[in-house]
Image (cartoon, rainbow, N blue to C red; front, side, top):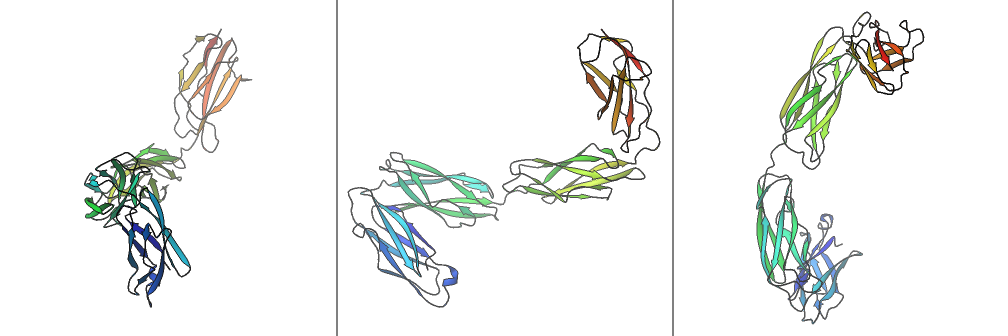
Length: 384
């Protein structure tokens, strides 16, 4: 049974040929006899049969065309084993001459592309004209089957795709009517994309917390992305087995999780790609023991005054081992019934709705187990 039918060229004023391919599984044991037909044999005639020998996986047959007065489409078909494949042949009264075929640039790294251009000696006829294209090494360099020059135009361009292969050169051909022109495209081995940097933020954490890692590549990742392998020197810090930098990107982030430790531990995280590795150190500290220290109040200053409705920003120092903080604001210095009794994750708090009166504020840290640290000193301020 035929697997495909290709016409070369697909547009002509002086004849063409058909190329039939059959599956490899059908090439063993016996010859294949296939029936050929034309939807308009007065314009484009074909032999009645095509025989493909048992040792071959393709066969070629001639297509003879007659003079026409207008652009005519003829369907050529091949049938065998209950399967029919068809392709359209376009017959013109005359065709412009194919005068030039070029590829730019003439050499590209694998995984990139070039631009092919075909040029005619005169404007394409009504309906345009398709120039047949082929590559001597389709596994290394791919071109579309045809490129159409629009009606009235004298040139058309198309994309030539180069795959990631060892250094090679492919011969490309462009055919229109009885003229075939050639151009060469060299393909070079694409330079490997490697890891140039690995950073961690933060670089020091308390066991149980996490750090964000970022890998940076030497160049934008190609189609399909780049897989970067990640390893850790200690089970106290774990990273995913790998992270993929998306096509076109140069960086990607991941999370390094840590577990509790009994002593300060320096852990090396390593990222590798393209035969190059980069490392960064993550320091994991044990959880602090005992009550957390009291924060130091930063602002507002003692007896600071604010107009009612103004946003007041309360700020205090970070406390080692703190997972969160509790801030209290009250109009009594003993904080017997706080106006604000708020837990926050950062060492800052803002409010614009405090009542117009004299008030006090204080803060304490809370560790990951929920244990509260010592209160800071109380500081007075005024809203009026």
